[in-house]
Amino acid sequence: MIELFTKYYGIDILAMLLTFLGIYTIGNKKRYGFIIALLGNILWTIIGILSASLGLLFANSVLVILYIRAYILWKKK
View 1 (cartoon, one colour):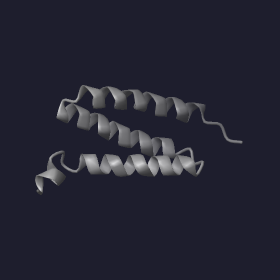
View 2: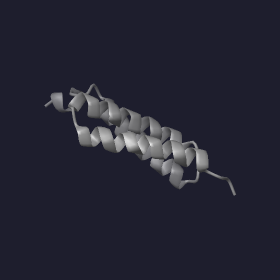
View 3: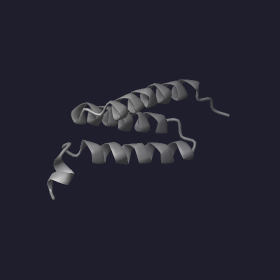
View 4: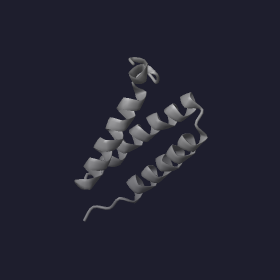
């Protein structure tokens, strides 16, 4: 049972929390939310490598690019 929580050294749990916090922060119109979510997606990319999941690796690699793009294009009112 403990292996469920330690299989990916807690990286998956941290990735999940960062992704949720980043999206919540973006919803509050804070630009730094993109950075938080970006860190979460980088961790998800690492999980994709560790689990040899091409789908997870590809999806999160694209999301990393999209978060960087959104951060650059973000304009304040």
